[in-house]
Image (cartoon, rainbow, N blue to C red; front, side, top):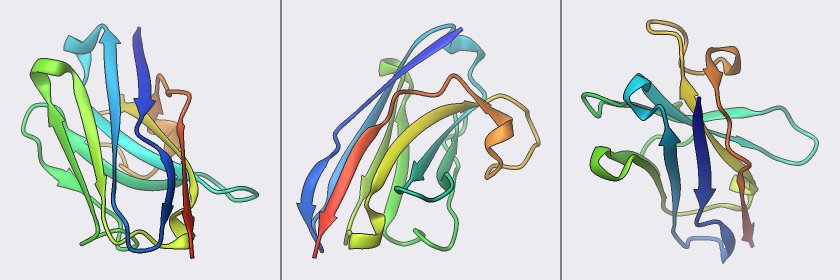
Length: 125
């Protein structure tokens, strides 16, 4: 079992930046990769970023590429999501999860487990 706790969300204005954190505890030695997802009200959960726990290699969808940066600190068992140039459409509940199936799709939520409770990001125009 892995427990995840997100933090860092808040209310910001368009163009501002935020850094989200996802702290992992429990069986962290078993983590293969970590992902960030977001879910806006009334919409499906959307893939935001994924990082390899060992190499640190990131992966992003086109929707956030160039604005968001995922990173990890293995010593702290923490994954970060740096979000720059925020837009109102970035408003959502942001959650992290463990990517549990090596070689599987990064964007499919079925390949993730141990979801955190999420942290709300609200971007005003």
